[in-house]
Image (tube, rainbow, N blue to C red; front, side, top):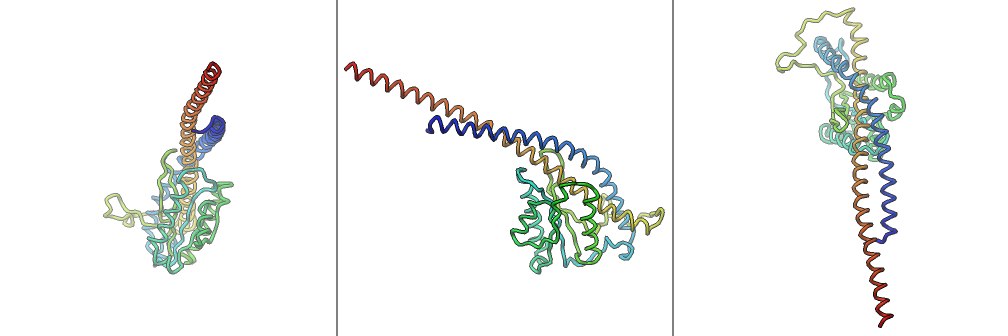
Length: 295
């Protein structure tokens, strides 16, 4: 059994750790509220716009008309990995990294062997892992989280869209954690480019058969609405990941605080036992000494 001083030092250390994790939990909860409000307000608009975008993409049959929906052989693949700049958020980062690596090694194994799979890393944790393990990174967007705005996000989205239009890449995937609530994040891998043609619920009749009226013109929609819709979808993925990060961190710090509380209870019990044993030993020594003197 450890002596009293050792147990006391451990109790003080655990108490200090609990104080830190409790403070981090409260900070994460405050940040989560703001990030959650942002994504919940953005999501309905982004999803509806994505639905319209899929419908428009289906109605524009010519590749010349719809450059963002061109289906090409998947020779060059770009995977956008969205993680966080900081840790202490449980398995949030590792799950996203594993999903991106699985996509590269399994889904695009042929392209990976040929060196035709590249990455855009948004978040220091993902960037550090990819760089450390020798994966091809064409852009590091970790600074985006320093000032997360639509304008800053749109710059990265525009770069990716330009690379696709210029046929540098034939397929672009986004890998990120989609926010559901503070305790639940849904690991998501979705196709960003080319734009997939949305199908109706029954899966039989695609929306390309619908009769569309374009206002002010088809050209204007192609030049303005489609690129902006893509930038919005990209921004939504970033916002989803940002809210998920704070939710994961709050949950992780909550569990760490609970574990520290449990450990303090166990150490208090161990301290009391050690103290009782020390007192018993002292009494035995005193009684033994008294008997020796009287004898």
